[in-house]
Length: 322
Image 1 (tube, rainbow, N blue to C red):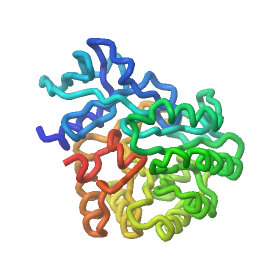
Image 2 (image 1 turned 90 degrees about the horizontal axis):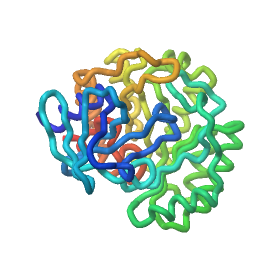
Image 3 (image 1 turned 180 degrees about the horizontal axis):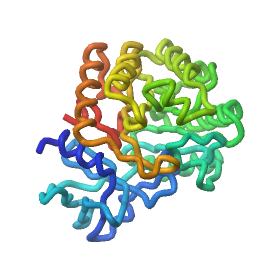
């Protein structure tokens, strides 16, 4: 089984049991998105490839840690040898930091509003980055919304001003105002990610009733003019009820505008608990559509410097998962 096929099946399940030698230093915690409040996750790698799997004691997948990061993955009556990757913060080789671990919005697929969390101080963020500076190549900043979108942006901009001192590429993903791209660009941020989340406005309206789909599209297009093609990203969740055709149309709309789609398999939590994860076959089918759309528009995931596309742990990513 080739890596792309294996990873698609692993993402269909999304979890693993972890046994063997203590692996605490390899466990990544999430304070944002669908994984928030969980028991952590591990990154399993084979060569240059990697996949992120949440820890679950009942998973049909098992990873046995042999020590020193060396590990074996057992799935579907076979064993693959590889390594556990030590996260910088949240993911390997990046300090990926959630500034505010709370959110006033209630998107149906997200657990963050259901968990208590705090806003990290600037001093705390600097300390976190300093603690992993020796093993990271980039900084990624994301955030919930503590009070309102405008106030959150002001705080994140101040965070960015204070972390420029590390002289690392910085990517930022927050819920935007119309001026967010301009303000981040003026500070020297190299990449941005603003998430349309759903393949259609109808599904977005159902999943995120308090947010503005058209605003996000406008901000994405504005961002490409500032940051350039291939430096702007947007999450689209696979499995919210969209058809394959609707997903294909969304992918092509993004790539035709110079935006790299981040195609995230649904993690069924919060209001969507019990919803099936997308199948491996569907993930592979959408992967092929994604790759063709990128090729047709001259976009290359291998050029990403920060955030999810650079990590490539949670999704099937063209060229990174060949």
